[in-house]
Length: 437
Ligand code: NDP
Ligand code: HSE
Image 1 (cartoon, rainbow, N blue to C red):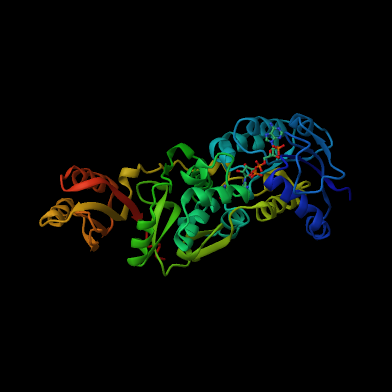
Image 2 (image 1 turned 90 degrees about the horizontal axis):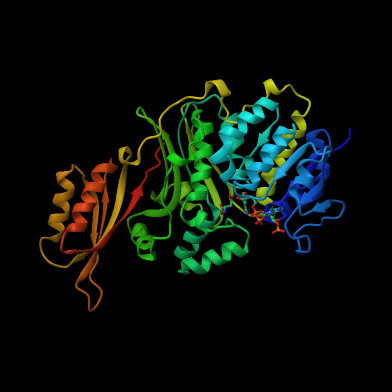
């Protein structure tokens, strides 16, 4: 049988990795897909740029439209990124009846509802395994492997760059900026790295996971997002003293009142496997009612790990090219007419435990006042540490761990504590999740 012809948009980290994996494993891929998969055309901005892959035999262009509108191309692989040009190209590809494979989480999280509706109408696939957690086949695991379960919650380290930064800061005492630069050189970071460190990239991915876990529309705008740029080495050390690791976690949970959808730095008990996921590695912990907890682990970014997911999608598309569109796995795991309208919970309504750190004057009555403010709001304290002031300072670091409380009550308490004369600067607040089965 003739090989399937694919057109590639983007020849950067993931595009280059995809060309390399497809070439190296061509024989194995053909045995799996039932026919070969060949990239015949590719687009990039600068055709003179050195590439990580061999482009021999691929017709190159600087105009991505040439690729999308080529009638011989059956699959368009979108690896440009962003949600401007990429969206136009993907919509055009769908309109022309082509299947799409993409690693673009921003595109899917923000425009997936519209894209999947268009794809459904045209009977084409839009596959996006590489968009979440790099090489980990987490979309397939939730959408197909766990299809017999009611998913209760899932939590994941889903940004490789952020986890790499936190790990290097903790293990080697390196500075934030220095590690971020290395992550960029290694091809892990987004074109705009604030997406990684401010949690936007993780929020894109969590939006997608939440949707396929609970059968709800993609609702990126409703995701609560907090980054890691305010985490200090002190917090990392204090957390360890208390038996926790700080991880940048994406968490989504189905509750009676709605769906929690949140990305923020989180203290996790160090004995949990996920607390020990380091460097660029990602992990997603999924709790199903039948299976219990399951954990998926692997490289969250990088050329070939991500290409592994892109090529798996290409194999899926090649396999279904001849099958009836009505009988394919639905894009968001649930049939389009069975998507539910469960509301996303406001962050103020979320209930969790907290780590608080504050700079307090080292004098009698200060701690008593802090605990009174917490007690007045039924916030009970699990642990408290007061550090000796450093030489020449009259301020001590006070670290508190609380039990679970509603976020709105904690917001009130923090406001009151910050208003105390004997408390200096802002209170650092990091949420704590036990991630118990
Ligand atoms: P890169 O910046 O390395 O590559 C982007 C590619 O797109 C480049 O080859 C660039 O051309 C090309 N490009 C950009 N604009 C145009 C244009 N107007 N016309 C033609 N070509 C264009 O990005 P990545 O490979 O890192 O990321 C690609 C996608 O994959 C993104 O959506 C990203 O979020 C996602 N992703 C990335 C991962 C990673 O580890 N890097 C992991 C998982 C997903 P040129 O090279 O000439 O500049
Ligand atoms: N910038 C992303 C990360 C790439 O670091 O996780 C993988 O999606």
